[in-house]
Amino acid sequence: MEPDTQTRAVGVIGWPVEHSLSPAMHNAALREMGLNWVYLAFAVEPELVGEAVRGVRGLRLVGLNVTIPHKSAVIDHLDEIDDTAAALEAVNTIVLQPDGLLVGHNTDAPGFIRSVQEAGHDVSGMRVAVIGAGGASRSIAYACATSGASAISIINRTPLRAERVAEMVREAADFDALDAGPLDGEFAQEAVTRADLVVDCTSVGMYPHHDVEPVISPQWLRPGQVVVDLTYNPIDTAILKAARAVGADTVDGAGMLVHQGAISLQHWSGQEPPVETMRAALLEQLGAR
Ligand code: NAP
Image (cartoon, rainbow, N blue to C red; front, side):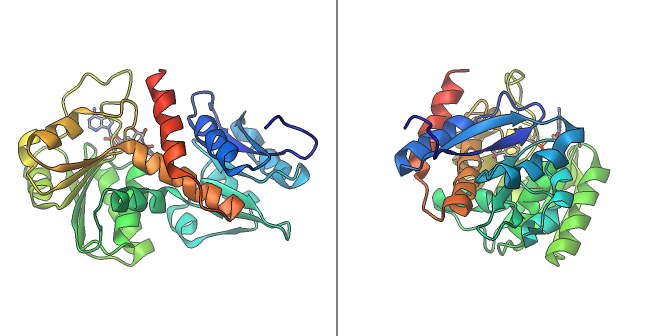
């Protein structure tokens, strides 16, 4: 559909944003849904984030996705945020409601849960090992705590950061079955070995530094486990290969990326987005890199 005078814009704000995969993924979905919208990438300097958010109402944009480094900064400029966004202090989706209110959501956490469900697994009752303690780790640990995980261990190269993630989840999700510790040594080995779900939330293995060993020893993995790597470029990473080699089930990072986008699109349109079309567009983009 060619843009015309009825076309509405939606998009992603970030700084930088030119490598975002979201325009390809969302525009493919919009074409299939027959919506006269166009999804754009807006490079927004940190000091102008308030003006960008106010522009949503002024320009009657459908809404925005929000990526690094603006996920927390946008909150002050919104009328309301949902519980997950409040707990994580991170908004990745802004919706301009028909009543003119700007509402912030976090779709990263539910997007992760859907990607695991789609692979045929239920986080409920699982013991989880979360490796890493950055923004992704916070979302995943919170998502697991609020989806019925039985216990969660946060493991990180810098143990103090793992403690901080554990504290946040304990408080925000009212969840006590949590511990935290360093990546090297017994704590990590025990936590990974007994886990039903292992989620690598580190940036280890991310392009162009993808020719590396897994962040944990492959010997800690076992058959019957579910192993997720959030890194999606490349799609098949060292930890996923190691997990498959021992007979564990694997879920790649494209799953979460697609589902967080699909939930955003559902917030904006009220319709069920074509998830497979979004995934195909994403994989095509990744193959092109
Ligand atoms: P971040 O805030 O920069 O955190 C990076 C984490 O990786 C930290 O815990 C860091 O440990 C750890 N780390 C980095 N290099 C390491 C090394 N050599 N050995 C051990 N640990 C190392 O990053 P983020 O935003 O959380 O993102 C993490 C990954 O998730 C990235 O690959 C990102 O692309 C991916 N991600 C995917 C999705 C998705 O939808 N699939 C969504 C969000 C993020 P220290 O604390 O010790 O530095």
